[in-house]
Image 1 (cartoon, protein in one colour):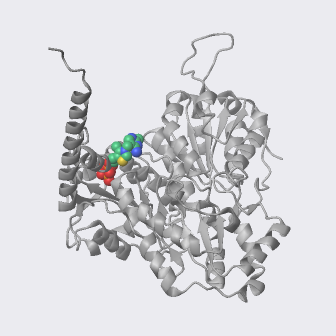
Image 2 (cartoon, protein in one colour):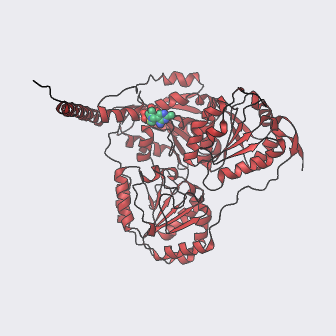
Length: 571
Ligand SMILES: Cc1ncc(C[n+]2csc(CCOP(=O)(O)OP(=O)(O)O)c2C)c(N)n1
């Protein structure tokens, strides 16, 4: 095997594992690594700060299922990544984070940039792999790569002493894959087949882990004529315009509809989902143990929140594949779901609670439903829509339908603002042939706008749609509902045309004539900022008035009760 220096070893090990991109920022502690990156086949994607670089790595994974690789300096660069690493942890996103260690001088205190990085990221990562010597680089990278994808995917920190890169030589890596798909136990597959054969009303409930098995899932759902319900991270795994795809919108009404459907269901096959709080509408879904088969690549997920009659420790695609081998046997089984039953669930499952929605300029009707119907007309089926956290995200969940696996990427259980734009950059690099659109609020733009410069500099085609309402919209609406007033949610949004121009991006103000232009924009090679004006509807004004009345009444009531409780003065 060839000998190489530490930087080259790091790069060649990543290359051998199929890595194509490294997201991050250089500093004096990792210039040797960046010099090796310069000479490698890996594309270094420079972000404006490490938080954005980490979101890029997350978007890269979420859009492709391939590990996102991130690197930063220790200290401040490291600290900037924390929110995004937490997001990746709760989103189950495989990120290999090559974090340089602070440079400590042996026997001395008060070292520069020296914080306890292990203690800070320890609770957020799947594992920490220490690499202190050049000779550990190959095995360390391979171990970290394995740990990030084995079981439930998640971030892993490769804690790297810069001296391992700058000094010494070691042997280059072998090229064997580090993770083989986890196959289900044949006896458990048999049990699952028996349960499926006996079931007349099966429902598939699938999460992000199933995204890699979209083709098999389609085949199986059609074979069994059984509906598929996806969590938010798996929307589109069965295209949401397929007759068997039942959309589950996160709402009280949808949860009720789902539970009614479950009452009529004889078997729920849950695949690649962890039954998280967000994925189950606050654990309100009622899935009895005797009806549940749960398949997941992570043991920790099985029986955690929803105990299963049959818990199968396996990768989703491997399990689906195993079931398809029994297609002949399963084919004979007749599904009893009627078209009407599924349609009736579709109505309630896609129903959102009666919350007021904003008006949206430039579409007809001027509502979120009108906007997302337009967006669906404009976007090719295979497109990937990436949102930020906020009201626009809630509206996307309600009104947008993903027509491809990994076609909708949104922050899942951590909900960081600032996620959308950089994640979309990562998603585009992972799926360069597919249109990628970021949909964010103006608050999210304030956090992440400079990454538009990254897209322009790196020549990454991207459409960034901004719902411009001038406010931290979601929180303002919550304040209205509760108090009838808002506080600290007003924004001063810059002139977006000028902003786009100054960053070298194109600009489109969305109005009644823009649909066809947007259709061209999303498939073009350009970076375009699209401004969509969003405003208060009459429903919001009514809600605000009601909130004010409720709040005033609450205070008055509280005042009178307190007055009544005060000790009466004598004489
Ligand atoms: C880092 C972070 N800070 C604060 C929040 C709380 N938060 C959730 S939504 C939201 C408002 C988002 O406003 P904007 O980006 O304009 O989107 P909109 O709600 O208007 O669609 C805030 C402040 C958060 N989720 N993440």
